[in-house]
Image (tube, rainbow, N blue to C red; front, side, top):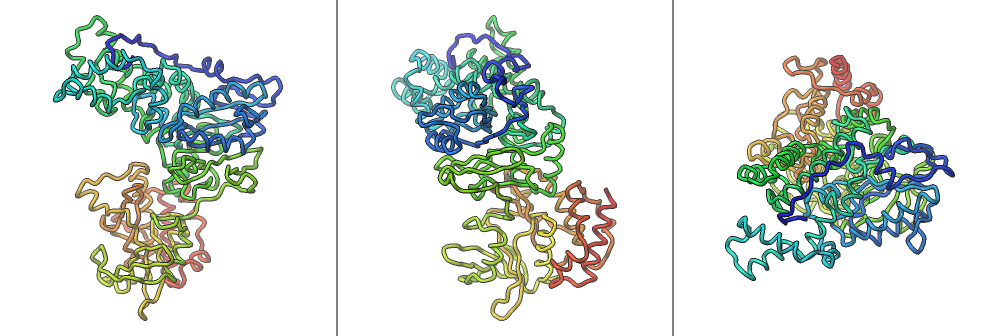
Length: 623
């Protein structure tokens, strides 16, 4: 019981949860061709329906379940032998998290009688609730638990917090009022329900981190490189999943003993527990020392971070020129041919594929606050189609991701942005945000959309044509680092017009001012790809000022290419050869004179194009 002095018995969930999963959700296979050799690995399934992040949007969830034929008007299973797969984040942000869980648990119990099955993987928000990170729980979710909360539990928690000085400057009613603001009615009942011994917590903690159905992997966030050393069985039992179980159990034990407060921030728990344990004299000190050691060991587990499959966004966001290698490696290790993920809302709010279909993103922003729509991916044999609850009759397929380097209004693709830059009206001409000779900063508008762009005409060194060529080469290889750049004549002067990415700062500023950028994509991998592009283009010096890092996504963008594309055919011997992974090598090998001429002939001459191919050969020779 959180916040009380009652001792919580330490309970270690068995390293293998197979028996528990089988008990909770294994169907009878007598009438079905599908087989599951493990609770997280099934084959021979005729129809799979995968639905992403629900976030407490119960009505929207019910609408897509009905549109896919999985529930009837009464909310009961009507899907026959279909396998429903949820990729997590059932809860938080929205108002009916518990209602969503109750519905899914009922369907999980009903489906086996018809030969179907419900498979649920944990999302990062389930893990957060299991470990007491409640920043995204809304008032309605607490209110739903208020009637079941024991007043004595609240009072015990208040006394414990008051004893530790949480309300040192307050007394009497003022202290209780502050406590009630910090812990709304239902807070402690909800924390108890989501503990390893609570009703919801027991159900959640028995869910795997990843499942495989017909060779397709389903997980919440993505496939981080660390999974290339795992097996699916280990991931779901003895390694990351067990870390989550162990952390949750130890954390509750330390709260029950008063060594942690119920609202201690995740990052402060180890230090606080260590401090309080140093003066603890209870008879159960040895058990609590073991609980603390468990908390300390699992505190840095990848299950809590972007290094694990619940939080990783690389599969959804990072440059495909290197991320494809990671995905291929992990798929091979885990026995999958593709992966379906949630966690990252798609730009178009439609189900989207990446990396030639290896990755399918199904989080389309179901929660109304995301302005998206309820959707489902349906897999039948080799066919994949999409159902949208608002247009169930639409014949839709997953849509390949379009190139979008940098945020822009209206979710314009880069193809559309090229058209915008070509014909939008110039409504302002200002000093550029970066001091560059021969450069103007323009504001362009078409309809309701406004963007900024650099107009480069007379750089101090090099040619403006090289800026356009760098963009075209980047697109040809799918590097996806150079912003949209076109040729345009303005006031009778030809030049390169380059889209300016607003939400970004230079790598020089990041280093100088210690700016924190999102950690979703490895800077080491991004810089390696940048070095490969520069080597191909003959750029011998890349200044930190010419690398922009997104403040909202952490993605690297490259600018200032006026001095690229020399006719030298060798790599610069003073620079260490950049890494060239399998996917980038495949793309480099696909380059030929005809493709280069088609993409670059207006801006680079034949000697420059031949030099690119020679440097390409040298790059491949370094592998």
